[in-house]
Structure formats: structure tokens, C-alpha cells
Length: 363
Image (cartoon, rainbow, N blue to C red; front, side):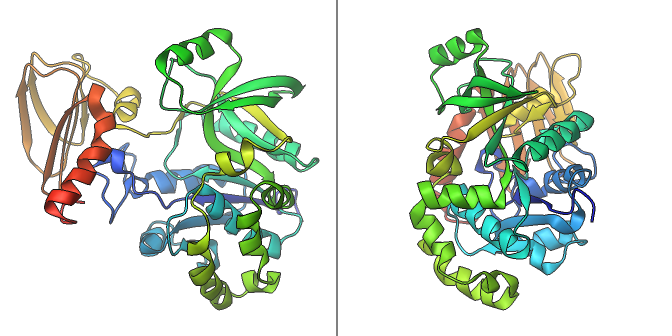
């Protein structure tokens, strides 16, 4: 049995991706879309990337029940027990708890990486190196490890981690967590060199995260402790249990539920070209640009006196613009969005307003 046989990966794949509306829809969110034109969707790229570190048979996809068929379609190599379908959305803490109990029932010695399905990593050799180092760290101690990204700008849309005592290599104790700061505080964080972006990628042993859940999120832990381990080994019994138990879980993130409370939290600072691809601007920033700094996503554009725009239009439509600067132009499935990049935080509100005024048709 090789050294990686007890290593598992949980890819969280249940989000709606409303910030990428109208491209990302409830029926096919952004993780199921080939945003970068590589021929592989964000989910498929996440799976491809982790296979260098974790055996394919040890990859678990945690998704919403409505996306199970999409996961099977895009990752046909998975066995049915590798897809866990949530009957309701309950944020990351219940999602991770289910995965931990599910994996521990199969392999009490398991260690695991938990990663979103919609991040982009450009330096894959560095990613592999960092993840191997993370696994080696958590396999020999009761530790909760998060990956920290060196900030390149005073970003107000990310959480921050302040590093404390140096432990080994790129790993330090976590001193503080700070949720999304305002611009002035973000500038202070950037100037100190002590703060890193919280990537939302975690490593720990199944035993360590279950201990932490029992200590800091006992209501959630109690749900998954309420049935014997054998339940998680029987697909039908597990499905029946989750259908009734999971919706009763509190909706809370793993950061609030555990990471900000625990005293055995560490951060590995990493340098592997990370982008969480959370917004149209993030996609713009990492995409190739023409001489006018415009980005075109698989579409034909004739742009006059226009700079800094991103055009994402499906089909054979030609887009002709004049005098447009720093805009998002996205057209998909009957919806045309024209929005300044500076106001893209309002897209979620636009989605809600669309639902109120026009129902589910355009979502």
C-alpha cells in the first residue's frame, strides 16, 4: 500500500455561481462551464489537478442533488459512492462534516484536502508540491491547515489570515482570521506582510476535523454521530439518513463554525498562481487581452474607442461597440447583461430582482 492510499480529496461542487450570471445558471453553474476555453470545465480541471496527489478512487465530489447528473456526465470515471448529493444547501460546515464522517467510516486513517471546484491554479507543479507538504504536516499531528495566498492588492472581497509563530517550511500558526475588510484596513493588511488571503482550501486528517467539529460545532457533529458508521458504508442507508438529517443542519461556513474558534489551526503560505474566479473581473484579470485591453470569450467583437471590457457572448452574434470602457457584456440564453465592472457586486441583486419580476425563467 503506497503512501497516498490514505489521502482523499473532497471537491465542493454545489454552488450556484450567481456572480457569473447570465453565463452561470441554476441549471448549469460556473463550475460546469469551460470558462477558459481549454476544453475542460472548472470542475474537470479541479479533478485533473488533484489526481497527481490523490488516487482517483479517493476523490469525493460533494454537490447539490440537482447536479448529480452533470457531475456524472463530466467525470464518468467516478463510481457512484464518490458522488455525495446534498438534499439542501447548508454552506460548507455541514458539507465538510458529511464528507469527513463518510471518509472516516471507510478509512479511519484518512487525511483529506477540501477544495472548491471553481478555482483556477496556473502553476500546477507548485500546487502539487504545496499539497504534498500539507498532507505530510497534517498526517503527523492533530492540526487543521488552511492555505494562504500572498495578496497582490488590497482586496475587500476575501477573508484574511494573519500568520503567527513559524512552525516549518511555509507553515505558521494562525494568529487571527479577519472577514472581508474595508479598503483602508485591506491596505494596512497589505503593508504589514503578515496577512494572506484565505483560499478556502483546507487539509486535515478525518480524525482531526471530526474532533474539531465535536468541540466547536457540536450540533452539526451530533447529526453525523447520530447514526452508526455502517450507515456511511451502505449507499441506500446513507442516502436515506442524509435526506432526513442534512436539512436539519445549521447553515454555516467551516470558517465560522470551526476555523476561527479552534486552537490548532495553521496556515501554509503558497505560491501556485491562484485565482478563485469569483467574479467577471477575476476572469478578466487572468484572461489574455488585445492591444486595447479588451477580453473576448469565444465571440466576435468590433470595438471602437473601447478599453478594458470583457465580452462573453454565446452563439454567432457579432458585438459592435463604440466608446465603452471597463464594462462586462455577457449574453447567454435570452439574457443580455451590460454592467460596469466597478459595479459587478450588484449582479447578485440583479439576479434576485429578475426572479421577483420575471420568475425563474431567466435564472
